[in-house]
Length: 154
Image 1 (cartoon, rainbow, N blue to C red):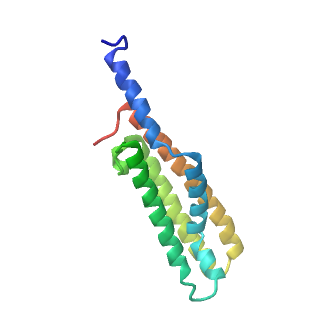
Image 2 (cartoon, helix red, strand yellow):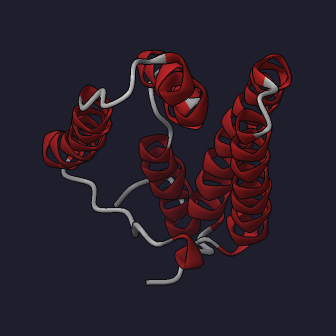
Image 3 (tube, rainbow, N blue to C red):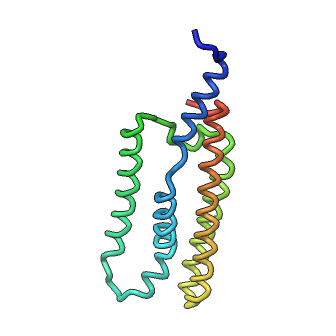
């Protein structure tokens, strides 16, 4: 029999499992670049010649790479965490706020580009990218805390 009480072993197991909710720094660096590229689509489309078909292919490549990374990570670690945000109670509200701010920012960027204000759109792009990036890091932190505390719903 182990010297460690059972509840302490459960808490240690939760903490070890919560480490899988985080991503490595390389992921966050690539995520930041992809975020700026995707949030700036209206700007990039306005700068490119008409009929540039490769924007769709770039978006497809980013989506496939993200999905592939997630699948490979789950297979490599063997840890299957719930994917829906509703399973993490303390992260849900933050996720909704980040989603709303990101959507409002993208609509603002589209409006600025449509009005011919590319300079202002670039400033808005930086603000949207920073808010979304920091918000996603916060959501992941809250998810990790929920896992460690055992508040994850199946």
